[in-house]
Image (tube, rainbow, N blue to C red; front, side, top):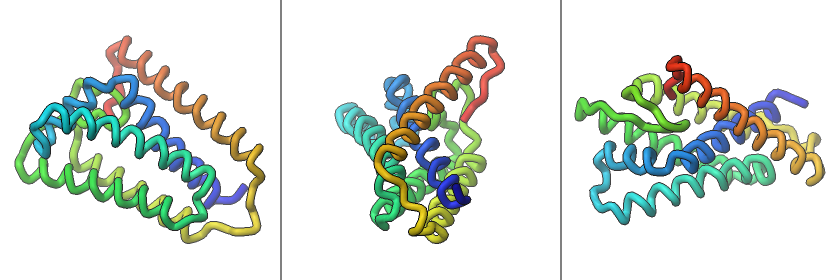
Length: 173
């Protein structure tokens, strides 16, 4: 394995953990969308939450199976730019929000940290895309196995985070 491939796996894991955690706490995620103040209509918020989860899950699949396509990188980068824009908006408005980016959060989100995190995800995407090597193509069975490992890793991370919540030593994303 090479560094771009490891970056690709990390990106897929990030989007997978994010989408699964939002699925498990969809009501909190909808509340987060409402807190950003971009939409007021409950129906639009519900549709947006489902759409965002779907896009994140699809992006994780595309990163594993079709990362060589520019479209995949553009989806990931555009999504991160959208999130950065939303965090800048609430920062300028001096609003306290709970983004629930990686599951339920009881504390307000550190907006600067969230913006930097999203910028690092963009940088990781660009690194993995730009420095990928075409001679390390994997057959579908290996990719399927890797995606299975990622799903298990995502659930493991969520379980660990849930245990921390139960002990009141939560990690807030």
